[in-house]
Figure 1: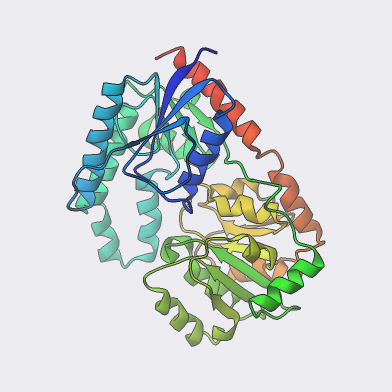
Figure 2: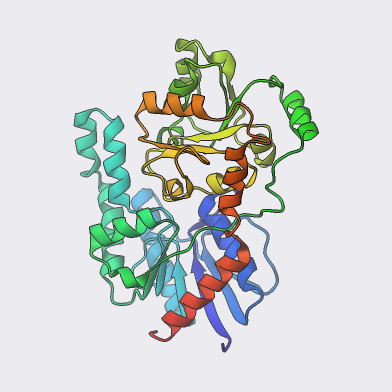
Length: 377
């Protein structure tokens, strides 16, 4: 394949973000191929290599709509001026060649969010100017003749795109994220014991881990309610400006001493390795990387029907899938998990399921897609 110039578009690069990790892994995977790698972004916080070309594109902004529209217009102008061979956007910007739908479909997220809001407030969601802008930008992009292909990280999102925008199924490619299976591994008995001691968690307790910021969407309230009547502990890694509300909820349910809020952590591996399962009853999530990381560490997973990661779960074998708001089913799933993941069949099957999710497989799928699209650009 001849060398060509590829531009990846992501408004803000945060090393801890799921979409950003896809970008960095894709860049690393594609390094082996004869491709000039370019990134268009407002802000790049990650490490980079000399051969990666980082284009800072940071127009003035004075609100959420201005931020989105300003970056979209500036990024499009930049890539048109640069005349890249292929533009892959991770933002909803009409005119790109390939769009990676890492955030799912905005309308589908709002429909799920309505379920936890008072009816009057839920009805206002679709009238909110920002949400209307995002849905409009999304529709404009999917109906643009420039769009030659879409990357989804879950079959769930592929079907949502087909249903919402009537976008052709043969132009949508499902590419699951990669996970570093050499780094994310089950601990030894000694490592688990040392981690429990370091973080002051009881050695023989069954501990479930919840990883994610934005607690409302990720389902922390449901997770707390699910473990409340049991003897299970909940390890919470992530941030939210209303963290105190969740502490109050745990206190009101009498499980405050079993809910451990550790805040945002730069390194999540130790928290997987001292847990016995992942509990993520998210309202809506295309496919969070935390599911792959937890499964790589040998953790069975409890997640929701509106999470793309549910596609990796075989009920009762490597985890459980429940409606995000079905507290009874979540409680039953919590108690059905093995008391100790390490050495359990569910834990082994969880790790086995993610073994195909390698950077090599990711890059080969991307290269195949690029070759296909390049034939139509």
